Image (cartoon, rainbow, N blue to C red; front, side):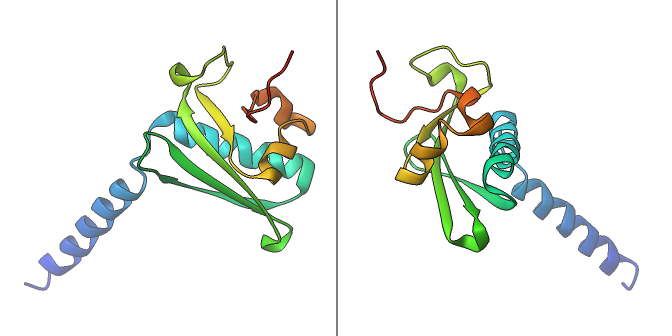
Length: 118
């Protein structure tokens, strides 16, 4: 009985870790790249991502101690209306995210800001 308790604890931890990290590869790449690029322009912070109901994932990135919040919708690259060089396609959701689309390294991600170019 005492030997089975540690095994149950380890099995539970493994299952919980698998469920928590069960994100598509493009989501993990988007989260990591956007966090890194934002750090270059805005300083350190953190991005978090969660599934949304409309077939995309919601990403929220906080900078400046949570005073600056940037929100994006993340889709797989094949859903992009134009060619992207990444495995994902980003849509800026709030004004701060739209501003970030032209700053520093972020401009290379071709973020959809809803503004027609031409």
